[in-house]
Length: 238
Image 1 (cartoon, one colour):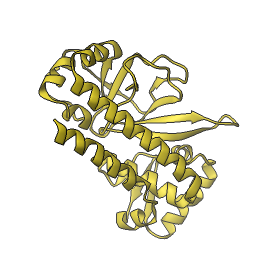
Image 2: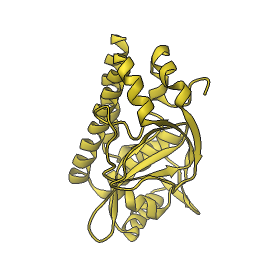
Image 3: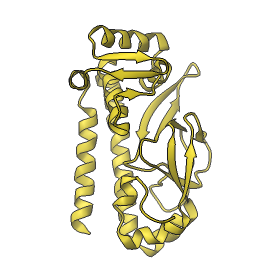
């Protein structure tokens, strides 16, 4: 493909590094609910969400429930291994918000990494940032209230898509929080009573973004700060 896709990680690559993988990049339009990997699947390709596309990692827990542990949008990629070889998916990886993802075969990425230390370094930095996201999510789930976490997730989706109307159902929000749908609905009703949110069929509408941000925990900010520090060092070193 020609030109850089709307993915921040791909856009940060040097011209040489991008040229190494460009012939192997394949844009695919995927609908919400499309499963990229089931838990235990071999990860044979890396996917780079573009634009407003969003992918979630859903970890199974008891009672046949799943808990969202990670959201990946245009800032990153899905399937980047810590090493140069393919790995197994630990969670179910599913498209949360529809859009374009750019697919890169794992083998093509491995060959490109063998030719470029800077590409290997960039991807290693991203793996570090993704680990930071997971650690922050674990801390958030242990330390913060359902209200704070709900506000955090809604703010996060809002920042990814840049729209006040978010295609997020009560059931999907419940999955992000690891609670029942009825519990998630009560939290939404509380925000509605304060005129912070409104709801439409299959969507949540943000009425007062500053108020929503004020009720969210600071976990998103901590992760974004780490991204800036890690990739700031990468930019200054290149």
